[in-house]
Amino acid sequence: MRFRRSVLVPLTAAVVLAAGTGGWYAVGGSGGSTNGPGGDGGPGEGVAPIARSLQLPWPREGQASVAVEGIGSLGTRGEQKPVPIASVTKVMTAYVILKDHPMRADAPGATVVADQRAADESYSSVETTAPVLAGREYTQRRLLELMMVPSGNNVARLLARWDAGDEKAFVAKMNRTAAGLGMRATTYTGVSGMEASTRSTAADQLALARAAMKDPAFRQIVATASVTAPGAGVTFRNTNKLLGHDGVIGLKTGSSTPAGGNLVWATRQKVAGADRLVLGVVLHQRAGTTPAEGSAAAHEASRALIAALRAELPTAANRA
Image (cartoon, rainbow, N blue to C red; front, top):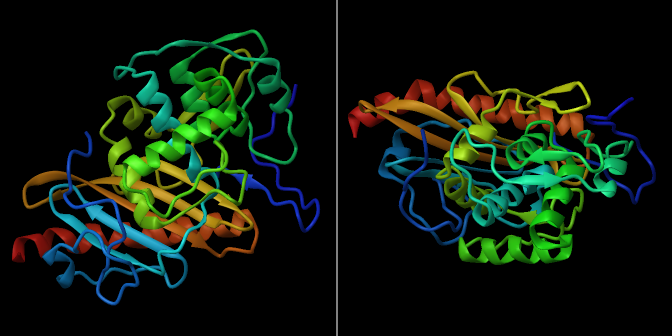
């Protein structure tokens, strides 16, 4: 029995592949675009004064945005125009599922029966999937892990059908939720990120990450290093290669040819005597190349930002 994690096969020019590749309480300001020094963002949350003394290695392409719990925005770079976000889409999918079906930390959540469609899609050769068996009962938590850790597209669609009856109805929930969070530049057209028509900005995805990280169950799921698919004997490692290094505790990868590499990350850092959550979003790295090349670029850009923050943020905070 074989299951595919991330099989990238060029089909035609018209077909692109999407591969998945403590909490946040309040940072202040809105979820709109923010301007760092020299940034291109629109009106929205102002940049925290501390940002002026930081020399962050912002990516030279695409978009990026960073904020710190209790301090505020450290800036947004790159034109904040909507771009494809690939499997980063699943952050909203998980957020809506947990809003509709709340779970306590460490709890299994509701019981979900896998349908035949989700089982059949486990064998897809053109997208990232996770194995499920038709008719088998799964906990809500395990399915969320299979969606977020190896980025199972079939599991995202299964959860959407379980929640809303069909995927179209669930997508409508995603867009209503985005509007409620002030994500004015975001449009969801699917639940997994396979659709290049799902588009957002770094600033909008940062607003979503802030909201999602308030949920203890969500924080646990995105910090999961590996997950085993029940009944299949297959264990998957988290697609976020930064997880567990430099205080990184999440959050979600996504890559495809049109989207390039994308990474929403969360790390904890001691700043002015307080343990603070730092959130960052890097989008549209090496778009138009392979998903693997884009993913590597997004990881490298995020790693550079995190390293600079760990080196400079405590000193900058002491000077402020």
